[in-house]
Structures are given as C-alpha cells and as structure tokens.
Image: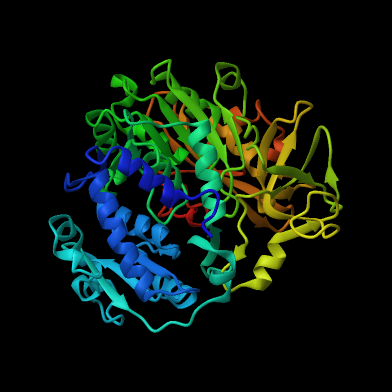
Length: 529
C-alpha cells in the first residue's frame, strides 16, 4: 500500500495538470524538461528500477546535479525503491564505503564521472531498456546521453524492506565512517506536505536548487517545487562555488525562492553585488544547517525586498525540519535568532542532565519524536539504539505502555515561557575553561557582533594549567573597521566575561567549508592568513 504522504503520486498529478510547463532547467547546459517529459522519463526509470532492484534493495545515484539526476530520483520514488545519493566528487574511499554499506543493486553515474568507478563495470544505460524500448524516444535520448549504469550483485537488506524507505542520506560519523540515515517514504512525505503548506510554491515560482543532492536541503527545493507546478533551476557546482556567479544566476533567472546554508548566504553578501543591487524578485528565503548570527543575517535582510519572507529552519538529517521561526524585525534587534516552535505533529522536548524531560522555561538536550523522524541508521542497530530514547507515557509509537521513541539530537536548547526554543550549541560544543562552562556558539556570536568580522569559529585547545582555553579563527570583512588580534581581544573584554575571551585569534582569508557548504569546523585551525 502506498504511504499517505506520497511524493511520487503528488508529482505525477502536478505533471498531468501542466504537462507543457517547464519543470527543470539545468544551470550548466540550459537543458530544460517539461513536466510531461519528466513524468514520461521518470515512469521509464521506475520500470527499469522495479525490474532490476526488488524488495529490500536500493539504487545508488552518483550523478552530477542535472535534470537527469532529478528524473532518476523521481523514478525511484515512483517505483517505491529507495535511492542513495553519493557525491560524485567525494574521495574514492568514502564513495566505496557508502556503496559497500548500502549495497545498491543498480549504480547510476554521470558519463563524465564514470572513471571514478574503475571497479564497478560501468556500462551503457541502453542495456537496461524498459519494455517497449522506451529509451529510443526523443525524450529518452536526453536521459541516455549523460548516464551510465552498473548492475551489481547485492544482498537485500531487511532494514530497507521493513522501513519502506524513500532514500538514504549518508552523513559524517564521529568515527570518520559515513552513517546512512534512513528516511522512510512517510518521513519524506510528511515533511514535504508540511513544507508545502508552511512555505507554499506555485506555477509562477522559480526555485533555485542550491545545495548538493547528497544533502537534505534539496528535499524542499525538488519535491515541494515539483509537486506544486513550480520551475526548478539547478545551480551547477561551479556556479555555487563562486558567490559572484551565484548572485548573477539568482538575479538573471528571476529566482523567487532560495534555500541555503548561512555560510553560502554570507559569501553572497560579502563577495557579490547583492548588497548593491539586491534580488528584486525573491519572495522567500529559507536557511538551515548552522546558526546564522544576527549581525550577518541583519545585513543580508537589509538587501532584500521588504516582502521577502525569511525563515530559520532547524532539524538534523535524522529528523527533517522539526522547528522553525520567521525572521522578523523584532528578532533581528536581538542577539541570537531563535529556532522557534515545533512543526505540527512533531513533539520536541528538552532532556535534563538527569535524563528527565523538562517542562516550562528550561534548558536541555533537544529530543524529537514524530512522523518525520528516521527509523534509524542503515545496517547499524547499535548506533540506532544509542541515538534513540524511549520515554513512558501515552501516544507512544506502538502498543499501549511501550512509550514514545525520541531521537536524541545532541543539540542543546533553551525554552522560554512561551515555548520558543533558542539553540544553545552542540553537546560537544560545551566546554569548561578556568572552571567555567562555556558554550562556544555564544563566544562566536560575541565575536561576530564586531562590525569588522564576517566569520568566526571558536575551538577549545588543551592547556597545562587551565585544562582548556579558547582560540578563535576569524575572517575580517575587509572594511576599515576590521580589527587585528589584540584589538579584537580587547574589544571582547567589554562584551563577555574574561574567561570567555579567546587567548589567541587567528585571521584567515577564508574558512574551509564542507561539501554541503557549511563551515568545516574540524578542518579549522591551519595557518592564519
């Protein structure tokens, strides 16, 4: 039985209503596919996938961001076979680990990246033609030209079969081994249905698809857009890499909706003409993935039309989005942006250090339960058990008396009397220095309040006397207000207690970022610029 929240069905309905409308437009090649073409191609993909990847199997997609990639994702959803997006530019050891763990029966790759898979027996897609030779049709030729495929011998997975997955997203584990977050069809569909109601799109919208396909942000871009009749504009990797080019793309395409991480948006404000020329057609800007510090967010919002709705979305990959807050002038006048209140149907609680959930105004670890929360990590029951917490009470996930299962985010937050949540950092972002507990994000927020600082990361480092001290790594904004080491530390003494002032400040030209565009905190700490 198909799930209640069925993304594939909703896409097919939108395609049948507007078959001639442009659905996807490629930023690199300018190739466009209409809704009718997308549905025809995705239906052919679904036929192929269903025939070659049965129950308990998945499909690997190591393809560049392109209309073909979107068709493959839609085809897998229509077939009810989960897909695993794999960054084609990731180092070979990481790609091999993901394939070994996920065990895809089919592995699709872009023709120009096939050399990245020397041991997989990559071959022509035409060897997997659906019944009736559908690839020979004009629209089919569009798909075949850029894709190759490997048929693999892979054992079925009970995890995949039991959880009715839509896709699996691999994220970095603390041990350095990628972990596969299982997202069921219900998880994904529930999020898409909520997002389409909270941040609706329509046939007049032009949606920029900014984040890489192996990240979780594209779920909104792709599926809310393509179940609503909007046009999806794919931003190729090179355009995303250069803020000036990204800005030209957004302006030239008259983009109306954008969803990105704060690091990428900060780069736009610092290294493009955004502050001078704005984005006059943008009506919706969503951000997620990391904290957006208020001074930088205030600068960005000042360059946007007054009617642009800006919202902060919060949720790890394991939960999808579970809280959100509209960015208002009142909040921009504060010091840190809240993550807001819970998505309807989702329960968000704060767990105290004693393992007891708090009520009312409180502080604790965010735990989440609801229909968008992952069933766990693929082939890793131990890690799944460690991440989940069962609490007694009604409304449980299962038989009466079994309690309710929560995902432990590892994020700390504070709730005020109105229930509004404010992010207070990672569990591993709380350190003690000179006997005081310090939240690294609070120190970063203080540094970023300086008008001459554009980016900041604070790290704890061992110290023989104090146990731990703080060091800051910053990027100046290039203005006359930009301080140097001693000047910034002196300024901070007037903002925070002495124990929160970093002992050293290293200035850099740029801070490293991950493949998903967020600041790569674990890589920060090289030579100063």
